[in-house]
Length: 145
Image (tube, rainbow, N blue to C red; front, side, top):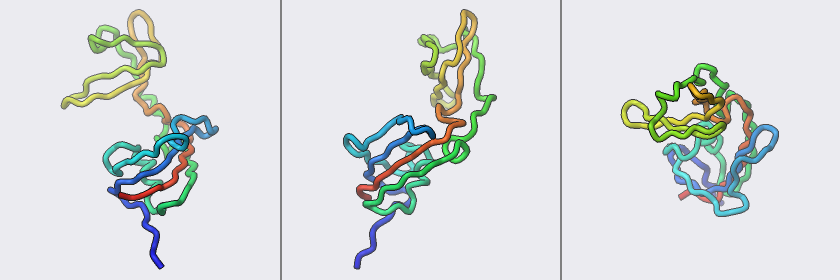
């Protein structure tokens, strides 16, 4: 009798997955298309979602219901900042509910969502878009490479 292989940290995994809000509003799904192949630990999938995959066997399908703290954390009001239009990146064209990208020290980049804008400033929310929200994460492990 052979033992079914299970997902471990660092594995290259082929899977179908679906991410939805707590009220089951679908955000992304591969179930009706090509499965995804992801390298765990590489940042392709949020660490909290990767953690759900650990121990799931090839061929299994699971649904994980994560509260806000388990998923992407609580919404942190300190990560919402009013930025003067003069301090925006030169190529920025802020739109309400659109994304805006800033350069981080060290050459990285970070993105925020525009929550409000007026002639003088833009209110940018740097929280993850799902912060403060419960998440429904459904997976089916197809294979481990």
